[in-house]
Length: 433
Image 1 (cartoon, helix red, strand yellow):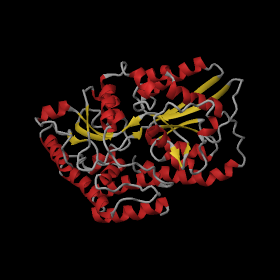
Image 2 (tube, helix red, strand yellow; image 1 turned 180 degrees about the vertical axis):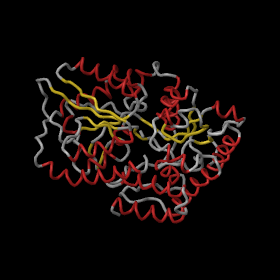
Image 3 (tube, rainbow, N blue to C red; image 1 turned 60 degrees about the horizontal axis):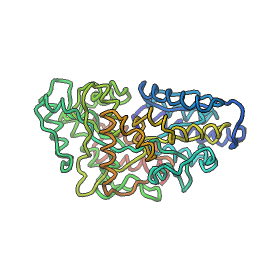
Image 4 (cartoon, rainbow, N blue to C red; image 1 turned 90 degrees about the vertical axis):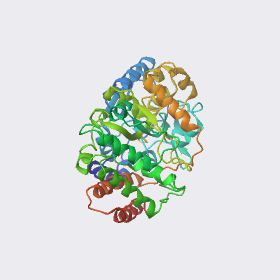
């Protein structure tokens, strides 16, 4: 789980507005209840995703309600492009859902603003003892548990072998390939495919900048919340992105911008018009369904001698600090991560479960694509990679900064060198360092 331009600008502004208003609304909000409730209650549960995810989640909710007849769950979901804008507005209005799905640096961002519940307060209703330690740590901020991992995820190159075959381009060896190999292969596919089909579906992303840095012994953020990468790495990143577009390996600048906010079905990979796409591993099932193709996962280029990849929680379940029904909310989260009925419905849609008992429960039920995702996560889990640090407060704005400046590079409004200077300046300002 799942970071574009104009929407990102609005989101950053909305988060700042929410932060300013939280202090005002906190004083007049209703007291939080951490006690078990006997009477019927209704809680709201928000998430993002396509129709397939909504169908699975609603089925899991129905199972939960059957097991907990005094708790009614109201689902709230939508596309990722507007999800965090809406959430920031809800937070500012003291109208946040009770259970909130988050991703990336958002748990830290909102926890540091006092908007999320310390889950230690609901441990009577939320059992985290069976969750893998690494998955637990992913959801911790300053030693406190604010999020529960929905499952493990990792960056990957999704490939469509049929596009490779049609172009007469051999599949790469992902144990040895480099970023130069990736660019060359992508150019070859574009050149040997029908117009409108490209070697790679996307420009590089904010997440791949982190991987790019880690392969150089750096990192996007340090343990103490500073930027952990230098100007040359950022410049090389933007230069590589530009060359992919200029060479035809990736779509043109205008085509790229058009695809920034589209659904899975409307991506080039989802339409069967791309050989490769850098994205998260748990996208495989949805992309396979959209394209109707037997897609595969490859490790990132350039992983030797220094791996840049890492295991990350696909998403997190969090609870609003202002929820009036924290016991019921905690019971829902507990059901989603610890109940076999929920696991068998959701399977790998939100990543490979962090509870080993749930992994065992779904192993034989996984689709072929789900098994590919699980095998990939197992491969990554055996790698010796550097630790990962959650971004500091303000880091969600860095995602927008990266996408916006990359767009300026693609349209040649900025050179890669000037782009790197601007990125460092704006990113340092965003995190207050």
